[in-house]
Image (cartoon, rainbow, N blue to C red; front, side):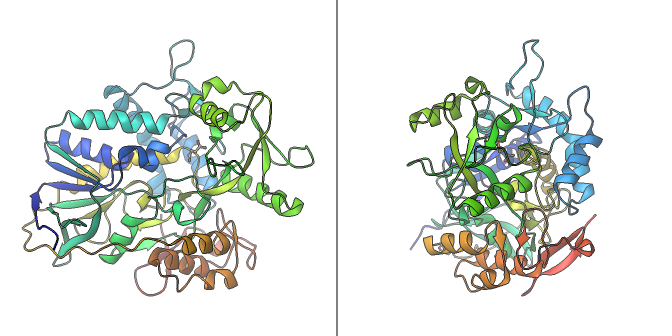
Amino acid sequence: MPGRERIETELVVVGAGAAGLYAALNAASLGASVTVISATPLAQTASYWAQGGIAAALGDDDSPALHLADTERAGRGLVRRSAAEILVNEAPEIIADLQRIRMRFDADSDGALALGLEGGHSRRRIVHAGGSSTGRRLARQLSAALVREPRVTILEGTRASNLWAEDGRVVGVVCEDGLAVAARAAIIATGGAAALWQRTTNPPGSIGIGITLARAAGAAVADLEFVQFHPTAVTGVPGREGYLISEAIRGEGATLIGPDGERFVDELAPRDEVARAIWSVLEQHSVDSVGLDMRAVDAGRFPNIAEALQQSGLNPSSELIPVAPAAHYMMGGVVSDLNGATNVAGLYVIGESACSGLHGANRLASNSLSECIVFGARAARKALDEPAAVAGQPPISVALELPSQATREAMWRNAGLIRDRAGLELLIDDPYPLAAMVARCALAREESRGTHWRSDFPALEPELDLKHAVISGPEPTFEEWH
Ligand code: SIN
């Protein structure tokens, strides 16, 4: 019989990636007590693995309006403008805020912020730290700031098993070991679900735990058919399967080379376009990889990538790196408003677990860390306005189901870059509930748009512009978001 220990706090945050840590820090700075629950150690969060940077319109030739236009163009007619406006307008300020907590971004030779370029951006606007180590440095810096906060308790190695709800309001979180954390609000920040696909760039914990918990508590989920496949993940190299080669490297001039020795795509087009172009080369030539030519790039600017490749016996300054697409980021998640609130009172969601409509059908590169920070701060402020909870007896914790290898293989086969009805229907009865929900959204969207490509419905249907597939009952329904 597990123990029944109980903690009282004002805010409970589930997940210790960039979004969760920043939300906790903001809540603590407003005077609240915060408990952060994290199943995995910091180094296994998706934020820690993130090689991309933080997108913000900071250059003299840039503006939030241009950042908005690029976000909307990449999102293929599905971006919720109100959410994207918040992101592009608030992103520049958060860079300054992160500098206040001693986050050091890469600088150019004049000491100004060095702004990088990635796919789909019309201007240089990505700030990095340590080249491709931005996520790692951000997570470390936020953790260091939190450790200095006496009001914050971090429970590492503790897995949330269910949300604690009373009279339709979330009043806390129950953990697998029986610990119950009572709070006036809970924020889900557990990341996405790209590790549900066999070939992925994500850590193994990215299986949508928070999305599953929120849905079980009655929260609506949406846009699960939109999963971004990163174009350049290493393949065929033992021990490095799925290792991400940052798009920032293409931003500095790396090119993609097909088996015939020729370039075949604009390497800085939005990610859905580049991933699909690679996929057709793989199919057409019956090969497993294309070559990433990094020979013109100063690999020393991306030390962690250069080191990982060298450890695998690959020399980026003299040979092509074998790459192919891998599942990387889920645009869908728990439906949230512009402050991270869900349809369940007391329940908030931020970061990749959330679906505010910001990314539409295809996220613009490096908008995700910006989202974690911008919406993490907003959700923390709003959640503290919830009435103080008077929680009674917590529910019994339940052991969480994990996806099997068979589920991950089936997702790759049937809900990969190119899908069709016959394959998606095979997932409908999958024992992992989130896999079945992805299939239901993907079946409902009978068109091809962004990262969702149906071979049986290859055209984009303009009447589905701005329409999001929302699951709040047995079948998805389409809702228009502005
Ligand atoms: C990358 O560095 O290519 C990934 C960054 C992102 O997912 O935006």
